[in-house]
Image 1: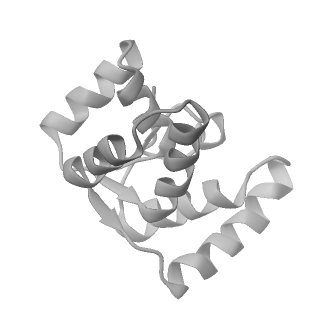
Image 2: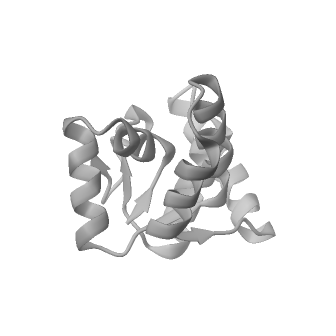
Length: 123
């Protein structure tokens, strides 16, 4: 399972959707794209949460997937195709989707941009 930023934030908040993510983490091998660290770090700073504590949890509870040239090039192509239908489809979403496809991992998210993607687990 590829946990995106939305999934991690729900996990940290701990409400109903967060409990679903916690269950997934306990039962399955989970991965996180390195790009999500930037988004998570931003959210933690915005809400004055402990960066070290939460980011170390992400790294401990999931395997980090680094970005490489092939992944980023694929993300560019995905972004171009997706923006034809979804005008606000962001580049970070494209990177997450490229990672999902490259590693054959379903994305765990609540982001509506992924709703039509096969294998997506919408929270």
